[in-house]
Length: 284
Length: 210
Image (cartoon, rainbow over all chains, first blue to last red; front, side, top):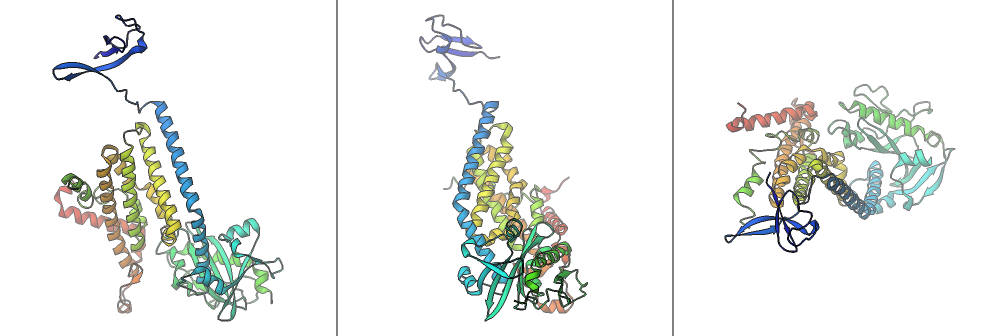
């Protein structure tokens, strides 16, 4: 093993060995006055320059500190980005929800969402236990997750809308498809039984198959279907496997190749609309 | 300027598009290539996002490459990529909400894209920031091109449309033409990809295995 060289900072004595001597043999300076040096050939002369202590990037301490600092820096960065953008994001989600409600009312290609929403949607109301419409929800309290509204707050929203002078009701629905959440809005005519329009969307259904529930051709199958069965006691509106429709007045063809997603839509409609049974059957 | 685009740097930028393509030659990032190519539009946006994120994570890793402890370098790379992807996704949600809704899970999938890890480990860890940037752009481009070709054919043959606009005339359907539903299934992406690899290797003898 090559020996290291140490130089006394006080008198310049150079010692060769594995470590610095405990005292300098020339000036009796202690070991702490020695520094490691390496010989450098400069203009025929051998000179000694201090060895730069390289940071040991493989030591445990360094690794731990590096990891900790990195995590904290990234955490603060992400928290900062999130807090700066959160208001905008919430506003976007609100606008998107309003757009979806308008889409159920056949209002597409909206330029100014808030203005159009105010024009068509007269009130965001909550259903009372006896099926009548109660409290009106203010626009500042506009909800974007209706699943949460029902499960956490027990609030069943009904949007009272007016299209071309006629009253329509929009009811939010939610459920699960094959890969994740699906949701939608069902617009009913003033008789609270026939469908005026629907809108569905999904979080992560298969493109080209299950995802087709969020397409115009699928929505167009719904208008004029009846929500309730002939006896008016249960929700009949649903989606059947392609070609298996038994009751064309309230059932629509599912998406071929997207059976589980179609079933999800079927269950979503039955489950969510059942909760509004009292409202649907009341003759207010 | 000429130094910035020296022969070596041009090589770094262009070789992943053709002879050293990450998808067809290195066979990286196959999983996401299958998932997002049923339609052309998500394929394009995915390709662009991967390009941007590969380039910037390459630059960041290259800048800090001397300080990264060797034993946790993969974790450091992952954290950088994950942070970048999260920031991009947050920005999209705030300023391009429609695009972010369309991409939904795909944008998060970029974190697990092997091309990123591959480039960070193989290139950025041992090269200066500028070549690393070019390498990221080049590899992202190579990935995007393959995705776009596969997405184009899958949407054309599977849905008879390009970017959502129907292009196959109704007369074809009247004459008995049917959309190939298999094209929309993930296995077909593998077969399409294999066809591209076949075509490329038959043209370039040096890519063929002995």
